[in-house]
Length: 83
Image (cartoon, rainbow, N blue to C red):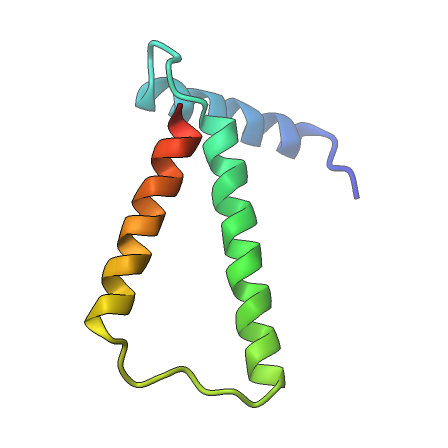
């Protein structure tokens, strides 16, 4: 599906203005961040839908060690991606 016409141009103009207000120097790759966040959202939604379709339940509690390991892993991944 391809969007054309004035609505597309209005959206593009608005996003360009918002991006310019957010990062006037253009040092941040906003389209890249938006794409990454979109991919993450799609992946989480797909995994949640798959788990629900299989009838699985989320755990009521997480172990502190699991949360710490997940936090360290997320930090390490972001530092690797930043370099």
